[in-house]
Each structure stands twice: as C-alpha cells, then as structure tokens.
Length: 377
Image (spheres, rainbow, N blue to C red):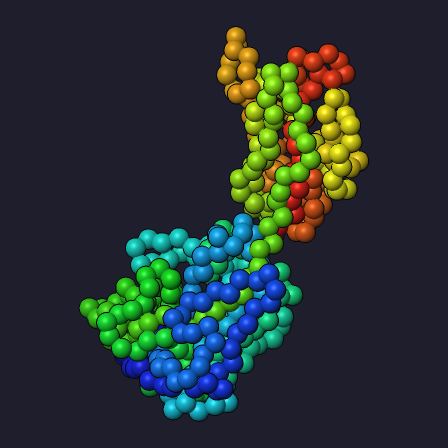
C-alpha cells in the first residue's frame, strides 16, 4: 500500500451481463465475503481500491467449520474492476490459501499456507475487468481442517497505473462510502513493509484507513465441499458390566500435523489393558470372541495402552481408551506404523480391543465399534 495515501475510491456500476457470475456444483457450498447479490443483476455500485500495489494482497476469512471438519476448496472468485467501467483490462495475480488464522487485536497471524497457485502450477492468473473472475481449483486438493479458510489474492503485475499515483483497475469492494462497513476480522490487507492487517481497524499514522481510503468488504467468493469421511460403523460388544463401548474422536486425521487426531473408546472397563487395531483393507463385521471384528485383515496393532478410569477397588465402565493417531502415524508413539499412514488420501479402519475378565476365555475381551477415516494433508 503506497504511503502517500493516494488511495482513492472509484465508484462504478456493475451491470448485468458484464460480470461473470459464480456457480457451485452439486454437494458444494457457496461462500461469499461481499454483500452483493449471489448473481449480480442490474446496476450495482462497487469501489475500486486504487492504492493496492504490486506485491500487496487482499484476503478474506471464510468460516467453514459448519461445512465439515475437512473442507476442500473447489473454486475461488474475486472482483477486478476499472474506474470507468471498461471491459477487458487485465493484470496478473496469484492465489494463496491458508488453513486457519489467529488475531491479536487488528493484527492477524495466518495459519499454514496450504496452496500457492504459481508454485503448484508454474503459471499465473489473469485478472480481467469488468468482472468477478472465477478460478477452478477442484483438481488441486486444497483441504482446510482448522474451520477457518483464508483465501488471499496477490497483485503481481498491474500495468494500469503506478503505486505512487494509483491504479485505474484494481481489486474492489462492495461499498465506497462512509461510515466504515468493513466487517472486522473478516477482510485482510497485506501492506508492503507492514504485513497483514485488518483494514477495518488499520491506521497509517493518525489516519484510519476505513472509511477514508478503504471501505466495505472485498468482493471474494468460493465454493467448497465437505470431504470429511470420519464415521463410526459396525456393532460394539456389550461388556460384562452391561455397558456398550462407543468410539468417538476429536480433531482430524493428518499426514503431516504430528498430533491432534484423538480416537477414543469410551464406556469400557476401568484400568484394563487394550490397544487400537487398524487396517487399510476396509470394513468388516466378522464374529470374533463374542463380538465383531470390524476390520478386514490384515490387521495391524498400535502400541498397548490402559483404559484408565476409576482406580481399584472400583470396577465400572469409567475406562476410556485414548490414542493420538496422528502422533502414532509419524512414529512419535512407538510401534511400527505403516508408511501409508502419512500419505494423504489413505483410508483407515480402526477398532479398540481390550481385556474384560468378566467373560470366560476366549471371549474375555472388549471390542468397540469401528471408525473409518481418510488421512488428510
């Protein structure tokens, strides 16, 4: 962002037929950062942010937690406009996507970068006026697991002006008039020499950016789909106290995170040894020690653990088997994890086995139901 504050707003009409409308495919969810209609019709006032320079960027934070625990970006769209409403004027931009964001006041810290278009494809993206430009990224496997998807568009080359004097074509927002209507902690601005900031609160010296030099919300859209596959299945074996063990989990399976996907087998007998069985061969429901083996052989074993729960002399169903599968996959918990557990897309089936002395051998076992999940990035 140039420091001389030649950061003017150009009002403009976005007429039906001059802007490309974004559509999503089956089982996809449409997300929108701006307040414009989903499909623009009729004259719509937008603002050209003429002071966003080469090497700077706009971004938007999309809350995708309600879509699923693993969300894949299918396409992303952004507004690029000319102050005179001219069509066909171009610039070169890049797309980067981050998984997650945290805030300290108006200063954001973006999560891990999970995608860079130029690095992934070796090509650039042409931004064209007078339009909402849409980019298909469905083949790039951009997966978000934090619940916050941060989409950023970088201005690489803009021949339509200068940073000192402003640009006649640039990224745009949905509002160009006071008072400040930018939604806090939803819009992002990367300023050279400063870094990422929230434009709704950012100030250059004593001057607040919004609404004098920036206003509204970046015109940015996206289509995403839920690719979460973690689910329970099969039938647990009732234990000798009459309790039904139950599988549950927190977090997401990941090939690289090294922790955070905790598989739990609850309602089991307290203070009993057990272990997590897993297989890469799919589901099953084979009779086994008075219950069902929910895995197709060959079956692999994780290191042994204890169910915990109440200490002796109590005997009850307060035990819970807990195991961080991400940590196991990268070798942090010992054992001999299969190499495929660190390959995104690997499908895993798992089930807890434990001891239950209330049954006579060979049925003196606890068996939970099964869990099925795909390893994420």
